[in-house]
Length: 196
Length: 196
DNA sequence: GCCAAAACGGAACAGCGTTCCGTATCGTTT
DNA sequence: AAACGATACGGAACGCTGTTCCGTTTTGGC
Image (cartoon, rainbow over all chains, first blue to last red; front, side, top):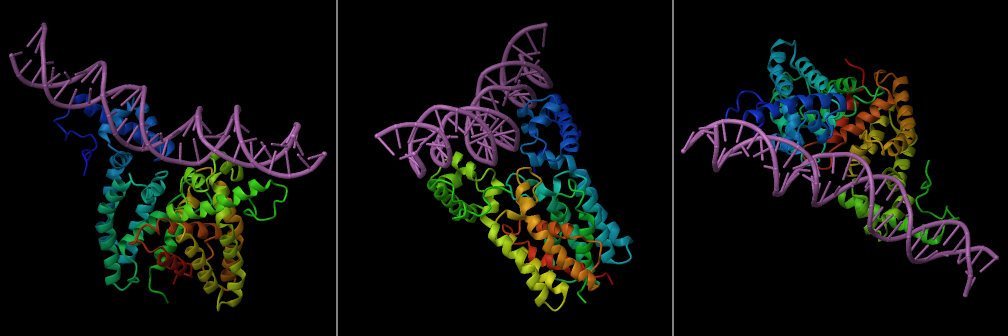
């Protein structure tokens, strides 16, 4: 989708070496900034952490979303790949779904502001939104279908709605001791089972 | 909490009549702007709709949150007041809780962006946040307690977590045909019942 | 009609993401 | 080694927020 598909690995041979180095530095700076101030850390902070101008940042990551994607790509991929393994290992598809969603929730909750930005209808984050959905929606759908086939859960909630719901429940979970997103997601997943 | 407690009714006698008129006009402009562009309509739009300067807007409503509160105050109050009535009328406390939450969800879903702004950890919306919680949390707690006393639901979800969860589930419900917040909230409320 | 008190309007400020372009560096070619 | 075109850099500037501030205007009791 964009040129930052592979972080700043050795994949982009044709680029100048200062460009490769800057991209790498920017990624490290972004990781640090996101950790310190959340995903909404100002671009200027990230650029100055990297000792680089704004122009440089924007050439490598045309939008905030691209930078966020580059930072979290590996973790999202790991989450996606865990799906089939969980399905194979768990006692029931519903248990696998629960475990997979827990994985997703753990990821979201530990990234300050990521859940919020994921759901933001602000254009400019569409790329981020799309990436997450492209990667995770098929996995979620597979688990959901398996649970439906096993007649464990209701059939009127599709994978997209479920993922968005789980993502939404994670919003604000980090900066609010009185709000237990994990438990609430657990309740939601319980509710998926056929009503009595 | 602030001087806009009563919209722009005849309550504030001591104010100059142009001030009263402007406040009323601003409220109408805000209603129109929120309807047209969502709760995040720029203050400048609202001021210019009202044919009034920015200073005037900010004198009457010291922050965006105050304006939003003034616009939705009556509907929030109505929702709060519906709680006890539903509890008295419904077959079971859990049914009353479900109906009350449906009321709340209907309110949120029809106000573009309100759910998002309600959950935003952005300071400046704390007033809004506080008002909603002050008004609705006791009602939710009453319904929740009743359902717990009737041994209908689990005891590990408190009113605050539930309300925030429901609010979160409503985020983005307006601008996303593929996302069914109402149904998802229904699933969550189902999940509140004791696990099998 | 006078005049303080009250309210108004909008320029100005701070902070955001993003764009743009003159300048500096790189790496190849001579 | 020198020169040169392509590539990349830096940061001022733009457009958009919400909010503050203060010179000017309006109001309403005397």
